[in-house]
Length: 354
Image (cartoon, rainbow, N blue to C red):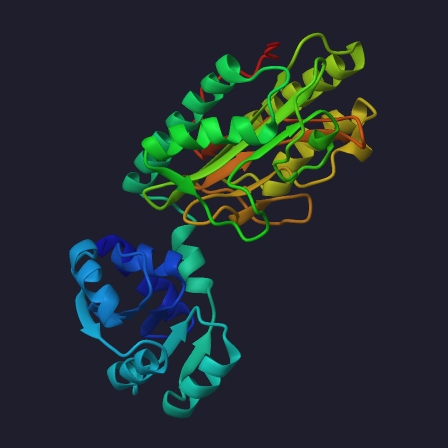
């Protein structure tokens, strides 16, 4: 935690700030080890304070690391307590709430709203974060194994989700709370698989379905993300061809991952192969993204990005082909950027026909 705080202050200093204030739970957790309703304050020298309502104080004291915990009244009271702590400091905060920032600027003239120090720190994972991500990825691999044994014709997408989430919860893996979906998982059979962010439905699996299973779950705060596509019974030659194209595309993308490589070159490695096979218009999203305390973090693995990969970034590589109203295929791994990348998922990428 001490090294994280040094890193945060280093990035804060680059934008002429001596104090960081975390409102977002991900940044609060990164700074303090506590995930809850509170405000985290990191001051020059490394002194760290949590300002929490009384209902969170007990847990904040128990779960945080090397923090002073101060009680403030819930809501506006927390802001007042914050101001009393840092009134004369040069502050940057992840808060982007207009009314809160307007109030803070009246008392703290040298305050700016930016996530830059937080994301610049979080983008490189430390040993503890990598250990947690590896464990999360292993649990997800076990869930794919459950799919291979429990998925069947006539089963509803929602029924498979229930089986998988029951196991996940037993393993202390939880829903990410991602705001753009109503479901913890993506389980999409047949034509539903053509929607990259399909909602889980009551549709029953049919013979000949390709089934996209995207497992994005949180373990000890950190998100691992992986996708496999299964076949139920005999599939067509064109579907099998498309599967092998996605598999080879993903292999080329993984091979392109190295420190100092531009992220757009990883995207290009996947995308060019799919385009050369005349499926380019059916690869309708970027190749991947960073993972960590959020589902989607920096860097973006996209043809639009000029960012470069750095050692110990955690990213996904996930090309896909989506044929509207027919089927979808996606293969995804989470990995740690190294000279020889650490691919955290070991479950087979060969086509499994159930």
